[in-house]
Image (cartoon, rainbow, N blue to C red; front, side):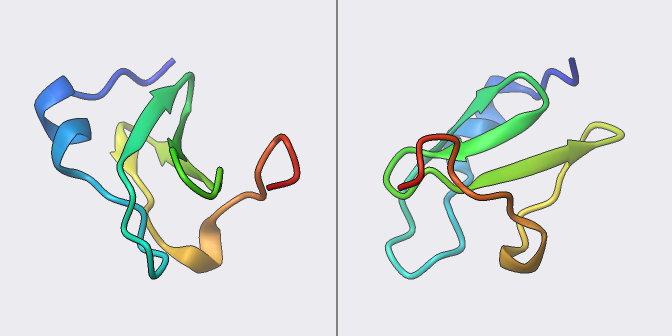
Length: 59
């Protein structure tokens, strides 16, 4: 699991129009509002909508 610095995760936000906070869950950052999942590759969060994975719960 690629663990990110908590201060970095604290300032990141979903790039979708609502700009909600994200939280780390394993090797992805998950939007707390829409559930989009953003991969963490080689310790770098990929916060691009084109690279986002759909919500695990179908939100």
